[in-house]
Image (cartoon, rainbow, N blue to C red; front, side):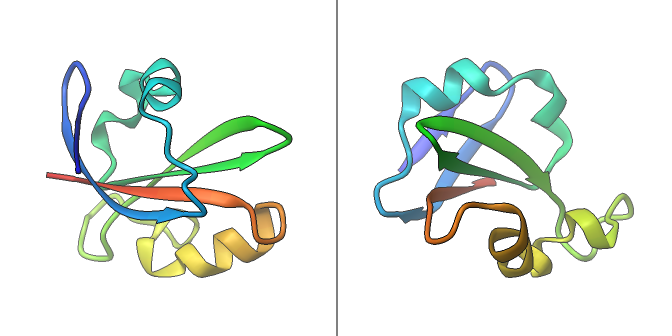
Length: 90
């Protein structure tokens, strides 16, 4: 599935527990996320949170936002077994 924002095109690569809602994502996604290679959205208490991640090869990557650390982020920073989704910039 492709999702198009004002400035980018994304591919939905993970949709855990059907956590992705296009309208909710579009309303939350700002130009702040334009630079990231991935956007992860998690839902807790019916609220969507977004976080940007980079490929490991991106010069802007830090441990905190390295996509290879996604599992750690989900485990340590998100509600247990929450709904979430991952979008990859095309």
